[in-house]
Length: 40
Image (cartoon, rainbow, N blue to C red):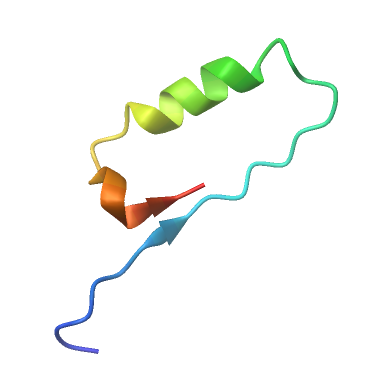
C-alpha cells in the first residue's frame, strides 16, 4: 500500500443525546489529525 493516503472513519452512535453531541463533535474537531483524512 505504499503511496496511498489512509483515512480515519469515526462512527459515533447517538440516540437522545442532544446535550452531549456538540461536545463530542467539538472534541473530534480538536484532534491533531489532518481534517482531510477524517471522516465522521
